[in-house]
Image (cartoon, rainbow, N blue to C red; front, top):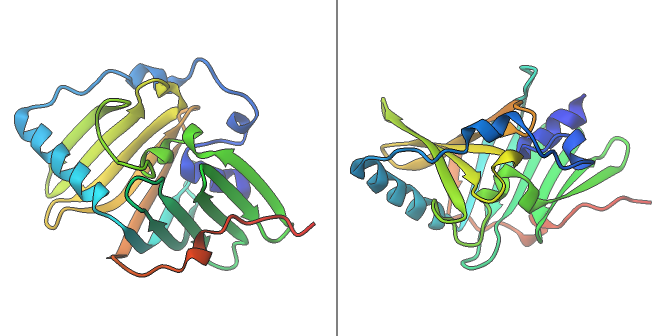
Length: 215
C-alpha cells in the first residue's frame, strides 16, 4: 500500500507500470484551455519562472489518493538544455526514496531492498523536468485559474494526454512554485505541497545518483 502511494507521486500507478492503458478517465480533459491575453501573459511569466530554477530544495507534504499524508524533503536541479533531476527523501520511519535522473525514475524501498525503475517520459511529472520547460507545443494547457493570489496551470502531453495530468500551483507575489497535483491514468489524485522553499542552492551531485539494489 505504501509503495503504491509512493509511485503515484509521479502520477504512475503500479498497474500502469505493467501495461499502457489506451482508454482512461483523463482523456476527457485534453481540450486546450481558452485563454485571455492576460492569462497568456501569466503563462509566459510562469514558463520563465520554471526555466529560471537551477536548483530548488523544499519540505513537502504528499497527500495520497486514500488521504494518507507523508512528509519529506524534495530536491531539484536543472542545467540549461538538459533534463532536470529530482529527489524525494521521505521522513522516517518511511523507508522510501525516489530519484529521477538520466530519463528514469527509480523508486527504492530500503526496508526490503526493492528497486523499481520507470521511464520519466511516461509520468506527468516528467513535464516539470523537461530540458527547456515550456507551456505550449508538445504540452497542452488544459486549465488555468488565477484567484486570491494563487495561479494553477493544468498540463498534459499533447501526444499522449491519457497518461495523466499535472497541475502546477504558484503563488502570485512573489511568483513561485508552491506544489503540484497529479491525476494518474486511473483518475487517482496525488497532491504535493511545498514549504520552506529555497532556490539557487549548491546541491551535491550525489543526491541524484540513482539507487541500486544491494544484491
